[in-house]
Image (cartoon, rainbow, N blue to C red; front, side, top):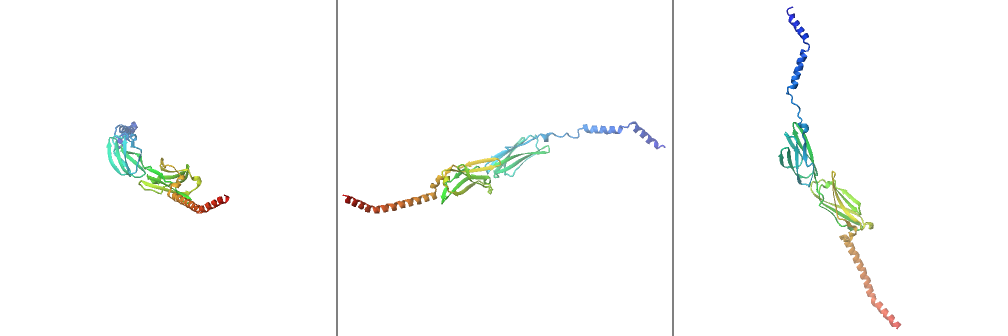
Length: 280
């Protein structure tokens, strides 16, 4: 009986204070929520930005370029540049880093700048395009061989050749066009397009031009030659030979006719004199 007395007292106390345990738990929760041991999430990762300028840059093949990576993060933890292009010098200041890229040979290169701030990483992208418009587009005077004429168009110092389309026009109408996708070199190149067509009288005196077009993902560069006319056939070597042969043949005929005439001249002259004497 004596041992049951303390247990009875405990049961009476629990019945008198039914919310004691819950109140104690609430107080613990309130202390943990207001004590400040759990840091408030930072707003920095959601606010900072990264920029890479210029976003688009055009250079000649083999040239160099500077790109500036800047950020609004006050204390960047990490900054880097991702590219396959060779690197040169690097300069930096508060909130920015400038990178030099050398010997740009690929016609299109993508560059990324990464910045880590307060544990979050962001990046910006720039695109570099390397190309060289033709130094010149030259259309040779046509060459006549037999009953066909040949046109040759020279496109000099152009890059990238694989994106080049060369077109011949006669009287404003396309007579031949060729793309050069099969070429994938990384250097400046010269291109010669040769086209042969039958010589027709209706095509003479019409202007012929050669056109070169580079199409680089929205960037289109055009160049063209000075116009020529098919009447220039007589001034090409083959035509000169043909003309010389014709002239030689004509001169030979004239010489033969002249020789015959001179040989017959005395006979005709004597017959004319005899006719006058008889009439007298």
